[in-house]
Image (cartoon, rainbow, N blue to C red; front, side, top):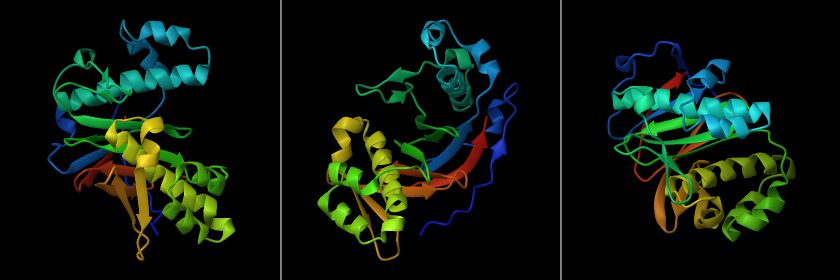
Length: 237
């Protein structure tokens, strides 16, 4: 089973983040970021972002929106060597965000923060509360392959929800890697646990590399990539 050791984070000052401070993003490398909420992000929304922000009634959702929009542009500007206002975030056919010319990235929202994986190669990321209250086996019967349901059934009842969350995070990361969207792709993402308790992934018959991370003690995260990668840094902004 994956160790619950937390990573060592490097925290950048939000008001002054220099281009040179982010290490070179080489092939086969992933940087893992946490974007932390702050009232200051609101004042940095651009002209396109302000109207949607103004329409959001819930204060927490407004904060998440500002953090995501501004934080992403600030973070991506470090890799693109350009001003944050010059970063244009686009959306794929099923909503996956991207920027022309790279880098590749994917983000995940949780109650504990907004997390982003940045890579020179396509990447999918999902982060969930490790102790999230779910009816694991009921959900598995709706969305999982028969082989996955059988594997979950081998766990003691008290451990099934945690085992389900682990598989769910892996499956969502694979779907997000594909860019096809959760409703189209969830049943195409197959997971299998080997005797060493390592989860392997397959999406529409194509092998997927899965890397599990504990960003915090209470959170599980999985990176999904088409080729092997290594996490080279954990950064907070």
